Structure formats: structure tokens, C-alpha cells
Image 1: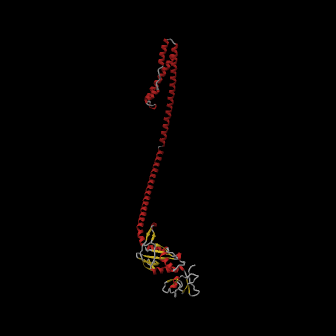
Image 2: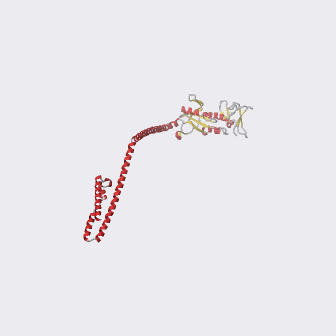
Image 3: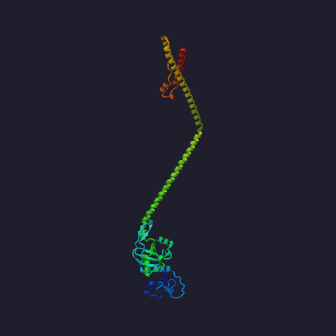
Length: 363
């Protein structure tokens, strides 16, 4: 059950907890909210507390506000205050904090040229620290920004978890000065000095990467412009080639027709040559048949007739000109000269004439 009015205030403004009432002079204690006279209630059933001496007093007592005032007063009275010995700062690194002994503490001090007022200004051996007490309201972002702009080390003590707890005065003092959760709103100078080279190295690295990115972007832009220039050159060349093709289209068609005519003439010449070869084979067959006839006549004719037949056969057996020898002599069919063809045709015609004459004599 929460304590109602656990704190009373003396005439000189010092706060007294209900657990200290038997050992204190309680005459003249007043309410921290309405300044009404309080009397202690030290019963056996309900928790000890103060209540107003007068009946039907309208008092909007808020334990959070009273605890906030008590915390500031106890820090300044006892000159004891624990602070976070570590701070998780730049790049999630942990930095040690050492401020030395607390020398003095002052409530409600105006800082930053009147821009902010802090709950307590604690003066340690190495640095002054602004202390904020969080009971009902956390320190706002604007105030933290002022701390950062003016490089004022600041920490916050979070007592919101204990604002309605039933504790003795010794417990409250222990939580306010030492055990209560506390953290840095803006780190002290020792941490900032340790962070500075890391920040400078990080900034230098970011600037280097930015320069590299800009250089890469510049090279990419140059490559794009070069590709565009090459593309324009190729397109211009393609236009020139197309124009040249159109200009020479008639000449190309004429050349194609000429080559087609040459191919047709070559086919006709090949047909003629095949016909000559066929005729040559027929003549060879006729010569072989004549040899068979001579052989048969040798067996049937007398010796004198045989001699004449042999003489006629020798004349008849005169071989025709050999086309294969002609091709071999010139190293190919297409290499035979016009004069060689004329001589071959003349020899072939002469052989045919002799063959016809011999056939006529034999018949």
C-alpha cells in the first residue's frame, strides 16, 4: 500500500522522512505541496505517514514532485553522487569515465546563457556535470540538444520506478545517490576526447569513399560519353555504307548477271566435254571389237591373207588421243590452254578419219 505523505518539510526547507520522525523534532513540519501543518501517524496497522493537522484540507499532494525535490536536496546536502563509469558512445564502443570526487553541488542552476536550467550542477574534480532527476518527466530532446551544442556533460537519474515505493529514508538516499539507474545524456570531456580521433578517422574514411564514389561516377560518365560517341560513329558509318550500297547497286547487279552467264557457259562446255568422252568410249569399244574380228580372221584366213589383215589391223589399231594425259600434262582440266584444246580436237578428228577409212578398206 503506497505511503501517503511520506515526507515533511522543516521551516528551513529540509525534507524529513516519516521513518526519521521519532528521532526528529516534528513540530512545525509542513506539507511540501500546500505548506499545511503535518503531524506524524505512527500506527501499528497502517504504514507510517504524515497527515494534515487541519481537517478537510484541499491538498493535491504528488509523491513524484516531492521525490524530485528530495533528490536534488540530498545530492547537495551529502555531496555524494555516483555516475556511470562507462559510456557506450561512437560506433557502439565503450569508453571509461573518471571524473574524480564530487566537490560541490548546486540546485536549479541556469546554463548556456540562460537557455536551460538544470536540476543540479555537480562540480567534480575534473569536470562539471549537469544532473537531471527523472521522476515523472524525462529530459526532453531540446534540452539534450543544448547540452550538446554547449558541450555540457549531463546525466539523468531515473527514479520513476521507485516513486511510489515504501522505502526508508536510508533506502531513498542510497537509490538517489548510488543505486538508482543513471545514464549519460551527453558524455563528459574524457569520453569526447577519446571519441574525437575515432570520429576524425571515420569522417576521413567517409570522405575517401565519397571521393572514390565521385571518381567512379566521373569515369562512368566518361565511359558513357565514349560509348555514345562510338555509337554515333558506327551509325554514321552504317549510313555511309548504306548510301554506297545504293549507289553501286546497279553495278553489283550487272556483275552478278555476268558471273551467272559465265557459269552457264561453263556448264555448256562441261556438257560438250562429257559428250566427247562418251563418243571416245564408243570408239574404244569399236576398236576392241575390231581386234576380236582380226583374231577370228587369223584363225580362218591363209597366211598371206592373215598378213594383210594384220597390217590393216595395225593401221586400224592406231590409238586415239588420250584426254587424261592432256589433263595431267597441264595440271588440271581448267588449266588446259586454248591451243592445246585445238590440237587435241585436230588429233581426235584425224584419228576418227583414219578409223573410218580403215573400216571402209576392211569392208
